[in-house]
Length: 269
Ligand SMILES: C[S@@+](CC[C@H](N)C(=O)[O-])C[C@H]1O[C@@H](n2cnc3c(N)ncnc32)[C@H](O)[C@@H]1O
Image (cartoon, rainbow, N blue to C red):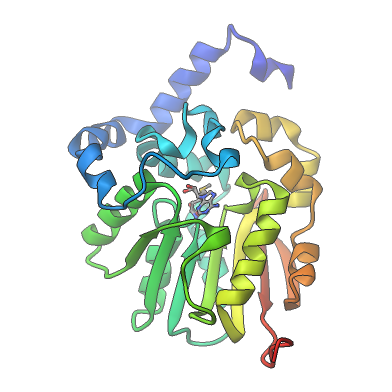
């Protein structure tokens, strides 16, 4: 698909992207005081891991550390999770086997799955964690608009500050195709620490088998880590982190859903 790297086509592609993003989202950009809203999520300048701060995810300079990312993300994701992004997120929620009380959405971004989780499990305490203060500003804006109480926290998925066994459900949507494989594995070990015995993880992400055969898609969405992600196997990563009942199924055109549990009787006990 060298056609997608043709510089003559770039202006057309950019026009297409602008059309996808829509005027409303760009207007939204102007409604936030990014400087002020950022500081409410703490760390804005330092301490970002290099694998994250050095990459221009989706071709946006600075990636998720740029206020353009949150106002364009939802529009672009509709096309990156065909045929129906919301349905895929609902399918992920439908895999939840017990009524959860404490839910964590890791790498929550603009909060699309977090908000659906709160709507599905209204009595549960729901936390959304992301490293990007910009994405969290948008997530909080969406939750406020929907009148939902969600705890938004800035932090690293691989080194969170949550206490051991804080959650009985962890949702991870579209995170692992954007982290190096060794970091994804550390994140899963962190999940094991903060998940209660018997707790469940539900992962929605790109279909590793299909992406292996569609490298042009990875180039189209300008994903720095998707190729190595596609070469890996989430089931094996989960088994290495001692999760059980690991199951992955294909969903949609290019996505997959994985679920697993922390053993009820923790092996550390
Ligand atoms: C592709 S977006 C997915 C957002 C959201 N989960 C969704 O389903 O739309 C990936 C998100 O993960 C966040 N992220 C990446 N690496 C992270 C890390 N190590 N810790 C916490 N968040 C991270 C990014 O800032 C970004 O918001």
